[in-house]
Image (cartoon, rainbow, N blue to C red; front, top):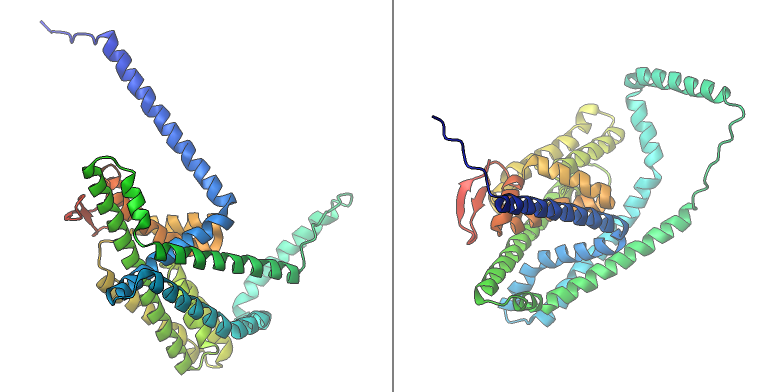
Length: 382
């Protein structure tokens, strides 16, 4: 004779349904909060972008400030010194790059024509296809004689350039001033965070998490900045030796674009290849410059960066691609450059909380170790 299970009491069923409703409401609130946050980041990007850049600049320069503090220089002196040197290097690089970049932009149509002439025989089928499309478009326009087309006049180039220059200068000033204040404040914000917790155990945990995030992210950003600067220097010197025009521009471009994994090196190789093809009459010699950039990118990505940074902060390919796509849509090219650092910040933050560790494990590469709350390595991620 089979014993049927006893039915659950109504009170137990009611409590289970209430907990399910609470979880659903909590999930809806979190989703709504995320949507509102994305909305705010998009429409207030003129405010948030300089703040995030200042945060990253602070984390990048904090190892230098700590090193100077170890030599007996106080933070209130070391911070302005580091910011002034950094600002001087940025302004100097911008001044040196202004003339060749302006010339390159002015000669862009001529470069495009020269590149088309080198591969005109390969473009013939594409040109015939485009001609057919233009004929179809003209036929469509001819069948709609009564339709009036309205065009919106865009602002002039000079006024738009002046507005963009003013916006960039304002953002640059905000980044430098905010970075100076953050560096000079020292541990003030850490102390404020710790004071917001009541128990001693919570204070210790918060202190450990904050210092771990600051240490890991600052070390990563500083190391990546140094590696990219070295890569740009090597590429610039190599292109100068090969006779490529404006090697300083391509060296700086390689250093900046290398903050975009996979996509940045491809852009650098493509741009150098175009300039080399239109510069050198021999196609075999023109391929030496992009080939040299490819060798430098492989050496940096496969040997230098893994050996210096290690495997703990490596991010999987899918997460990097999605982050670059999302932040480039949100903040344009500047957002694409900050996508991977933001991803590293997210991973380090998630690795320090048990409830979010599965997110950090998802963001990590296949061989990235999983760490416990004390930072000890555990099982490897999948």
